[in-house]
Image (cartoon, rainbow, N blue to C red; front, top):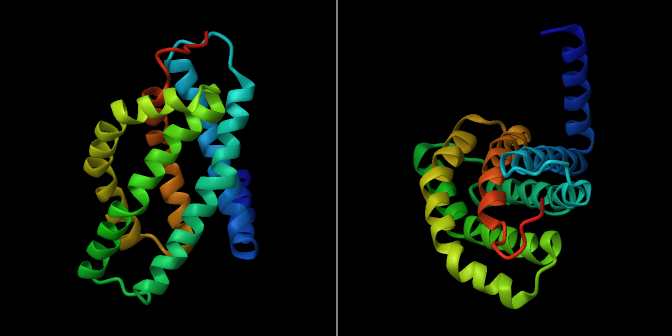
Amino acid sequence: MSDIAKEAWRKYLLQLQLHPLRTNAITSGVLVGCSDAIAQKISGVKKLQFRRLLLFMLYGFAYSGPFGHFLHKLMEIIFKGEKGKETVANKVMLEQWTSSPWNNMFFIMYYGLVVEGIPWVLVKSKLRKDYPSIQLTAWKFWPIVDWINYQYMPLQFRVLFHSFVASGWAIFLNLKARSVVIKKA
């Protein structure tokens, strides 16, 4: 690793230790923004839409980073820091039955209402049409990620790990959430 990368990582770890909520929020915002830029390019957008990119960064900064921060702290409280396989399985199940459905639904609503600015009636229709398949796909993918996260990641790195993987998931959601009615070039 280069000296520049080592120094950047050292500074990141210091910020994570001193200001974990803020650091997790900023990290999530940056990663969600990167995933949106990639999703825009995949979907054929010729010129990057900065308003949309900023709205996604806001989503990561104001919602997904803080949500993950407090979720992992709460899981540690509920399960008293235990790490056995049964405890990890229980953490995964709890997350998959509570926060996973909510997060996927909230993303679709945010995308439609805020990013695309479409009326609630169309967002509701989009939810009815696409949410079940999105959630079923999530239940095939995220339990493995959660298992790795709870089993092998120290608490301080769980939001970072989750945000990194979620940036790939966000590309999938981003492309699925796109309205058929409003396709911006």
